[in-house]
Length: 110
Image 1 (cartoon, rainbow, N blue to C red):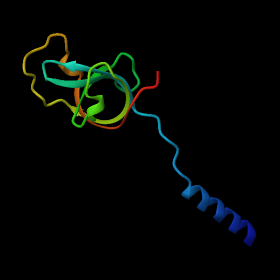
Image 2 (cartoon, rainbow, N blue to C red):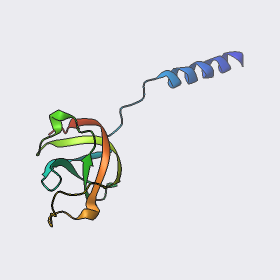
Image 3 (cartoon, rainbow, N blue to C red):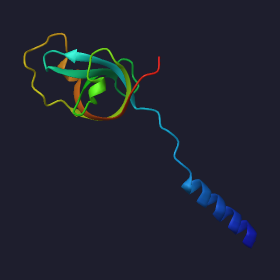
């Protein structure tokens, strides 16, 4: 009985110290220039629903990705957009705009 408890304890210790597996990024999308904000946004989908196209305006985009046309994978904490556009852009639906803090940004493997 004692050896069984020691074995169980060793297994628990081993699993609790094991490195966490790499998680799948929450978002993937393409960067695009938002002229009306003079900023780069990332066009992506929300919640895995192909019909929920959104644009995230990052607070902290890494400089190497701050150009239009990059295919990215990333995590983000998004919130409602509070930025005012420099001029109206009828091609962008304001209800699809979000701001966000991005992390784990990397180019998507082709």
